[in-house]
Image 1 (cartoon, rainbow, N blue to C red):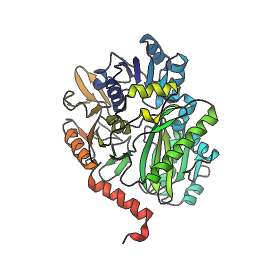
Image 2 (tube, rainbow, N blue to C red):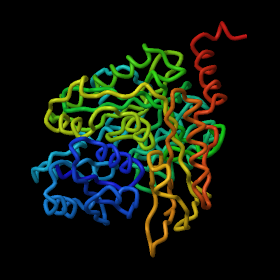
Image 3 (cartoon, one colour):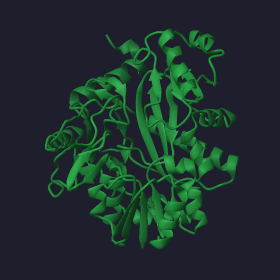
Length: 442
């Protein structure tokens, strides 16, 4: 098979590695925005250009005689790349444009959840101007709201009261900034609890769940600082998370199933690809934060690192509508992923600085992201640079492996040392215990 990967970040590097492990021995091709040497080493041909230039990507796919395409990032989905590839008779893992609105429009998702009475809903309103904003903020309360841009913002279009916004005046200023950018926005109630990611493979009818993962959006140790695209993630060997119950996981999967049914009813189109619900466990149960229409980044690295099944077979089953639970098996191992990012990230990162990574040592654990090759030098281009994944029997052991490996990456970079540590996880477990059983905490 000739398989095309669209995208050139760490998520796509993880996809390439999973394809490369397949016993079907596919020939891998890539269309990316930069030249990622980790992906390039696994491919037969590599195209560098605008991955949202739909006609160019389709033409490249036809030239390469691609049998199956996998779209990594969200932006090409928003532009309708999956639709165009299917139209060119190239089966594609990644939902069509209308279905991808699940990620590309937070208004669409909240309205769909409301229309179909899907559990896990919360109080929200949609705004295109400042009319009514101040009144709704006061209704929710000074530290009890979240403001989200209604569109793709690379994981950085959300600000939370009490964390990023410390007064109604700051909130109004952020709303004005979004309006100036032409963005509608959603204001919704702030939820207290622990967030987690529940990703599924989907063939348009059948959903098959992956291990649950927890992401860490904040830039700095202790969950402080601005939001990022994700500084790191971890998963537990039992495929739950230390602060979750089996009932929590079942609630999240029920919401995923209901959302798939709602999308099918709304558009009468098969959702083929990754359905990724972002949830939060709260005192009153599991509630929906948002949806993504592709693999998470970093979450893809966690789950694909422990996927025992043949990834090519899973992708074939998704596009053919023949996916079954028996086709998807993950190892009962824990994972910890940590990202090295440029100094100044996310607000004012240094760009195009040289870094040093031995691509041949620890290559199973290493995933390159926002990098490029120029004149034989490996450059960090200004976003998340490279990730490492530790895999072990326990989260603690996996964290120690990840920490050891990430310190081998040389350059003006930093990472969060606390992701996956026993101390941080104990804090999360204690918080959930206090929320669920406050009377038992002295």
